[in-house]
Amino acid sequence: MNTRPPAVAGRFYSHSAQYLKSQMDEWLKPTQHHTPIRALIVPHAGYVFSGSVAADAYRYLLPEADRIRRVILI
Image (cartoon, rainbow, N blue to C red; front, side):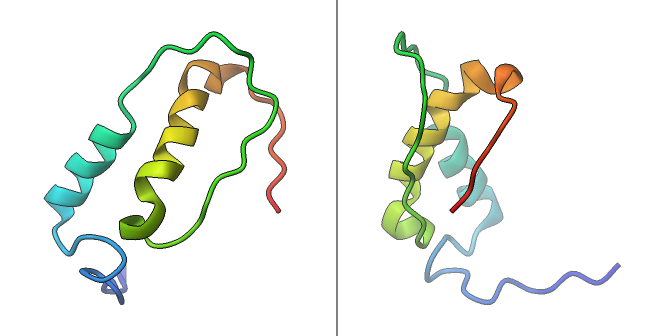
């Protein structure tokens, strides 16, 4: 199996796989929310620019993940 080396590691996300994993784990820690989610608008840029904001949005989906039936990505 060929694996392409990361092209922008260290620029848009950490070059360290271990650090990147710990960063994602921290950003995606479960949280409690009580308002039903109908839609999310999530930024997309390098992790260093919007990773924590995107993770906050996706973290709210974790408790609902098994009930999500439709995703519309624009």
